[in-house]
Length: 223
Image (cartoon, rainbow, N blue to C red; front, side):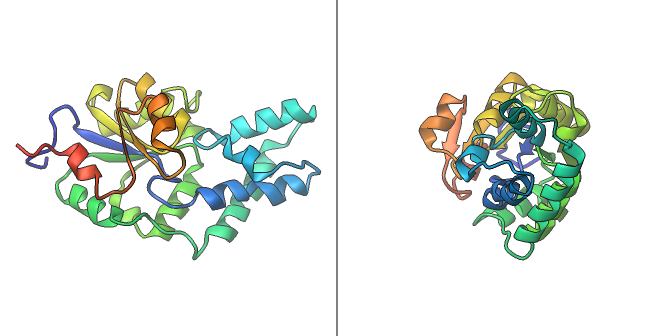
């Protein structure tokens, strides 16, 4: 463990889109042509209300709104292909994050990714951003019963890390993600890539930050 790593935090669990990878714009906009091709007319603002939640939550809401039975497998496979098309060669991490991840990895800090996306999407996004080597443990909402804001996904990550949930910190950009972290008994840290400080704090963030240059000061004590 790093010399100054806080005793209260032994492991880090990261969301993917909007936290590790600047991909929310592609992740959200990939829905539009897929739904439009099925005669479902929604705008980006509607899709963005589901940031942090599972694909299943989007489809459940659309089924209720339209009264239609939607083929989830077909829609999600096409949506993933559309995301890959939009995001390929146009997806990066955030400034300062790759060097921070390298530092954490070098110091043997246990880390996992816990995302609402499918595992294939997580792997693709991390690879596109060039940070896939930083993580050995990847967890998808498709592996649990309850997606965010339920705690299931983060509890799965803690089990795979072999760390007690109360010893984990979660880095999240979404309201459901922070709510899930708090419900899991973890330390919720809010990154303002998708929402303001105020919104993230109202969702339960213990601390919020704008840039990854600020995160070491949050994670490490100086004395």
